[in-house]
Image (cartoon, rainbow, N blue to C red; front, side, top):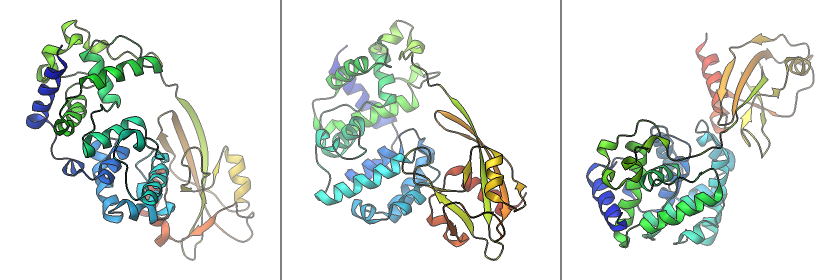
Length: 343
């Protein structure tokens, strides 16, 4: 296979058939490209569009993001998931603001908080024309099939080998880098999909070794599977009748929902009842919440606070008007919407 032929076909295909309506494609501003890359990690384009627009409306520059309180960033991120991305986003914005702007090469970009090698390469390729390949999951799949790469991509050594081969395929012309990089992403997202790839529409089908061997569905090869856990917890919805304020706790800086505000969470109903004291409890609809590695069943119990009840757990009263300013996980937003709308 000719590396130059692959790049030429991919660039020509992207310019004619690739995606051109994504809002982050209309810029070479490293702040906007970086923001889109972080949001698109583990998240579908259709979901990211709205968050991307809202973030840029509130934080039009990296300096605006750096100056914002973390709670405000988490509140705007709420519902997008993988909240460590929001904390890293904020820390990185502060580092970039302090140094006066984004560096121009992938090596320096990867030294910033929360920017991994593939994201650093995407920024360098899109914004500065650096001759490097991105290497996200879509790209790994495209190249593993193109090259009939048999090694197990669960291992770091195999990933490194494929990454080296990915770099060898990039075009020599810097001006072709944005279309080439976007083409890799578009091909993986719309044609060379994990299941039922549309090989007939692929611009490099005749170059694809896996297609020639009839092994497209078998590649890429990954033997390590993620083991899902089950968890069950109880939520205490404690509110004041006078003003509707909720008692909320901020989660620790590490772990699930780190830094977000939630109802007090308990491992069993007995612990929740002990915390509620004499308050009468009403069962609200249970919530099944799926995370990458965890299926979490949440049992909310609602009670009206009274001074005769047990001492309040650590936390604070938050008025309904202030709820949007507090970053809350998606299940709590869902519960608030259900209670507000009524059964």
